[in-house]
Length: 275
Image (cartoon, rainbow, N blue to C red; front, side, top):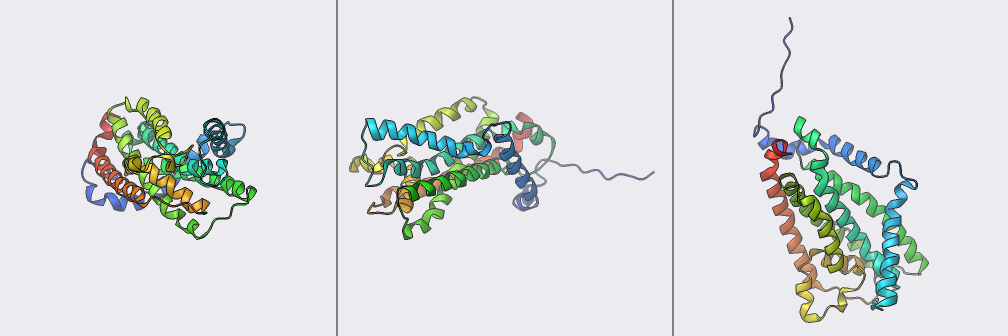
């Protein structure tokens, strides 16, 4: 009788191979991302058009409330463009944070049965939101052509601010995903954080309306520097970037990202037991 080899995975045995395993399990990463893209728009009437329709409808609401009723200044650019340029990074962050935060609980069966680096799951959720970002970016380009706006050299800095947005989404996503496994109350906190963050971020208005003596304190919200950076890079003109705020955002995002990875790795061993 032929003997069959048996593979036993013990806790801690793969510790020193963890980061190498991220490359080994890259196909799982692609699979999860593609699966989530298909599932998100399955059985919807207009499919992926929702990725464009949602920010478009949000822009219309903000233009009416802040542009027409509150008459907020638009920094010399059409108000719809001012809003949409901010919605791009904000909705990416909000969607990535939400999806990553719920990703481990949503994949509980997979986590409890097989070994793989768990960070693959929230990371794939962030990539799915990046696809939506690209689709919305195409709409912004169309709107800018419609209004006759042409970006200048600063558009080359967009990848830098996008990297900052990804780091912010990944860091906060890892934190909330790990906490959500242990404390299921966080699934109710996630929508509140997103809603509250929308109001304290300069999406429907320019951060220039914030008094100078409050500007640095206001930039404690890391998305302030990201949104301001996107507007500065995309809209050009004579707008000035508040570099102290951007620098503060950079430091805070890096801190959140690093501590998010460390906390996720610290608690990852117990996911299969408690999920």
